[in-house]
Amino acid sequence: MSKRRIPQTTRRMLLEDPQRLSDGAGGYSESWAPLGVVWAALQAQSGRTSGQEGASLSLQRYRVTLRARPMGRQSRPRPGQRLRMGQRLFRIDAVSEADPEARYLICQCIEELAP
Image 1 (spheres, rainbow, N blue to C red):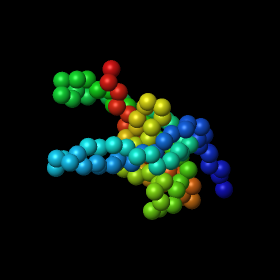
Image 2: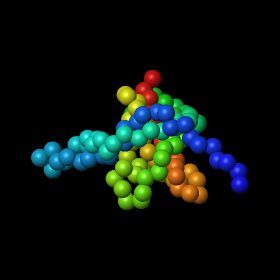
Image 3: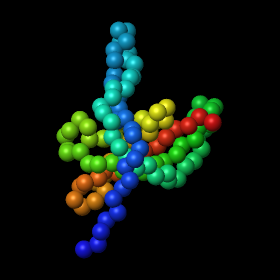
């Protein structure tokens, strides 16, 4: 049996969930509620530039690996949430199990940067 490489989860990140708050006028505003700290391995992947509303935006894709959480737990990341590392924000696009034993999760994330 071959040994699997254990991810070096040395990056402290905060898992956040979007919350819609009524503005009292029929609309809403969005805020982010912290769900807890996770330790992760961060690996840069492809990046590109996108023009949105007349501004240039750098989109960098990352593979974020972290210890698995049980299905249904609030602390298990899901698409639509984000990870925060200081001022850096990583939008979670997809989550999958990294290994057959389901010990780790892989989050496909995008970091948006305005140049």
